[in-house]
Image (cartoon, rainbow, N blue to C red):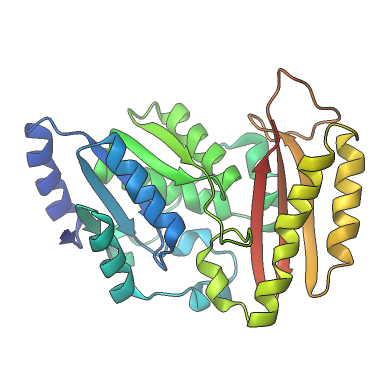
Amino acid sequence: MKRFNTRKTLRHHLQQVRKDRLRVAFVPTMGALHQGHITLIHHARTLADVVVCSIFVNPTQFNDPEDLKKYPRPIDTDIRLLQEAGCHVLFQPEVSEMYGPDEHWHMDLGRLDEILEASHRPGHFQGVTQVVKKLFDIVQPDIACFGQKDFQQFKVVERLVAQFQLPVKLAMVPTVREPDGLAMSSRNVRLSATGRQQALALYRALLWIKTDMTAKAPSTLREEAIRFLESSPGVQVEYVALCDAQTLETIDEFTETRSSVALVAAWVDGVRLIDNMLLN
């Protein structure tokens, strides 16, 4: 695996890759890799000849400075995992390589910048689009892989690609879960043993919704899921939403012609967790 820390050296390497007419797949990450990330690498290898992974803890998408400080950075372990997964290129820039002084960025994300994650993390998706646009410009991938767990983020990146007419295809890879159903997340390492068990309530709430969706209205399922989470020890629920999977607008009924998704966010053991499940 080749490693690069600057835009110039990475671009030079990828110029040769393109001269050889090889397809490039890109997996952007913030490190603290787990099996979910490795699944993205494996999937990317099936879609392209060369897989590029970035590790960059992007400061502009954190609206809580303490959350940024606490974000895990086990770089030696990350490098080993990428090598074992067959990643070809690692891009690991410093903040000064990605951002100049007094940079300003704003993108029109419409309702995506107001609802769900955006309403609880103001400015988060502006930071996401800012860094993803930079990374896409540097790597210029043919395809980029993202995990389903960050469902709203995927929709935001879709909008970015469409708005700037970027020549990259996006692939959403299903969420990877622990054997007991907990969605894999870099934040899980911050959970205590007790918190780890309490966090399973999010997955159970989503399963509850999916199981009962043929018999109950979305509003009823949402209310029941919120009551379940509020009664679960150690869980502080932020939101439960049942939405159109394309627009993320709230739905009032299920239809055969419209795909839908259930999304949940909650605090457990001082850690903010999100999860989602496609319903049909």
